[in-house]
Image (tube, rainbow over all chains, first blue to last red; front, side, top):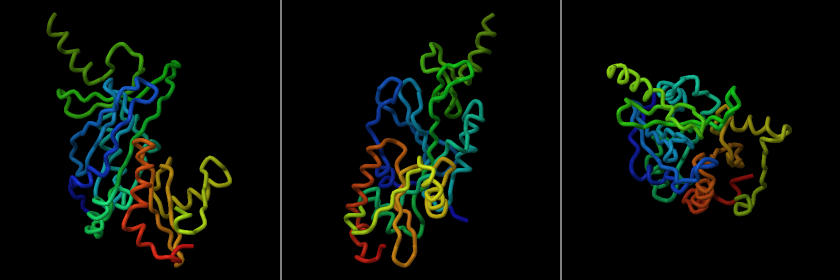
Amino acid sequence: MTTARPLPRVLRTALAAPGATCYRHCDRPIQVRRVPSRLPGIWQVRACPSGVVSVTSYTEWTRRDPTASVQRMLRTWSSPASLVRRWDLRLATRRGPELGHAAERFLTKHRARGGLRVVYWRVYPFEARDGTERRLFVCLRRTHRSAVFFTASPTAKTWGCPTCRRRAAPARKSTR
Amino acid sequence: MAQRLSIPLRILDIDRRTQVKAADRIVRQHGDWSPDYLIPQVFLEWSDGRTEHILTGFSERVPRTAQAWQDLFASDWFRAIPKGALR
C-alpha cells in the first residue's frame, strides 16, 4: 500500500500554469480556485469569472494512480453524476526534470516516494439534444458544501446551478 | 531532443490509423494510460532495452508544455545522460 503526502510549496509552485484566458467563450483570464476534499491531494478548478470550466485537476504525490478516487469524488460534486465519464479523465505523471531545478532536486532527494500524479478532468463543449451548445460550469458559492459542476448554455441568462435552485425553492415557499 | 542526444527520433501520430496501435501499446505499457490519453507523451529507449517515459503534455495550456521541455533540457537528469546509453 502506498500513502500520499502533502504537496510541499516547491512542488505546488513548479506545477503552476498561470496566464490562460477563457477559450471560445469570453476571453477573460482564467482563475485558478482550490477546492477542499477528503482526498490527500490538491484540487484546482480553472474557470473564467462566469464559471465556465477550462479544466479541473487533482494532484497527489504518490505512486498509485488516483483516477478512480478522482472519478468518485467528482461524481459526488456533479449534477448529474453521469457527467463524469472515464473518457474525460486523463492521467499525467510529473517526475521532476520537467518541473524546473527546485522541483527536480526536491523529487530526486525523495525519489523513493515516487513522483506526482495529476488527473485532469476536461469536458469539451458539446451539443445538447435540443441542438444548443452546452459547457461545463462550476458553482463555488460558499453556501454550498462543495463545488457543484453542471452543464448549461454559455449564453443562458439565468445561473443554472442545481444546488442554488434547490436552496432557493424552499425560501420562495416560506414567503407565501 | 533527439538531435541533442544524437539518437533517432520516432514520432507516432495518433490520428493516423497505421500508427495509433503502436502508440497505444507504448503508452499502455510504459506511459500515462487513460482511454483518451494525453499527448504528447515522450519516451526514451535505452541501449539495455528499457523504455522510459519522460514527459506527458500539460493539459492546462500549450505554453506550459513548452516550458516543461525547456526545463527538461536544463535539468540535471538530462545533462547526466551518458553518451551511447540510448539507441
